[in-house]
Image (cartoon, rainbow, N blue to C red; front, top):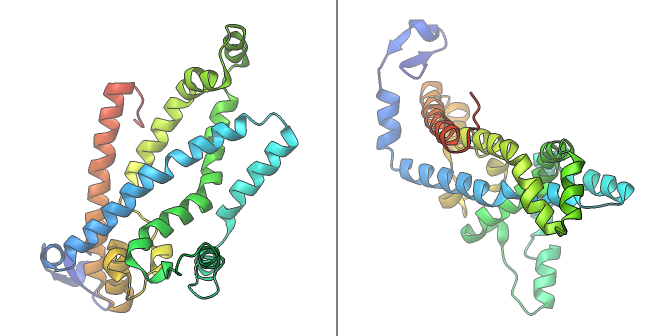
Length: 264
């Protein structure tokens, strides 16, 4: 479909072949650099700030010795994963409202002027990443907790006998033992590098934040759903898939050579 001028009545193979027309149109578009920049920055911030949080959360939960409290804490942290994205964005809108939001009420009490978080370009990426951390860290931490459970207790007992502190046991036993799991999760994350999560972006962005919020997926939405230009939107999807393929193959090769851990 990316290489034809798709027509409903003719189907994919009956539509006129146009070669690289839609790709050339994408690359020549004045929005291409903006879309690429916004997509890459959101993905990069997600890797830098979101990816470590489930690991830290899992390490922290594992150190809780009171089992009922640990189970309660784990339940509280992963429950946001089941909250609808629409509800999450509605919560953000209410909490960050410049007039009645609790965040701005606290800022006002501290003598700071209200900030229009949802309509300020400077805050869009920050709000997006923080909401991602809150919504998905607890659920992702389950994977790392499962890996931690598989570590032999004799290693901790031997380290404790040798006088290792709690932090030393985490650094020299827990983290090295779950490192293969961390690397596999990182490879999967890199494979989804171009997938930002357009539902939340689509619900969060507005004309004021469009300059920093517009990404390839929202462009696909406008081209494919709004303008019904299916071939153009499919070309964008294929372009994203090719970038993700190159990234995951490169990361997998590097991980295989450096750490002997790979997806294949």
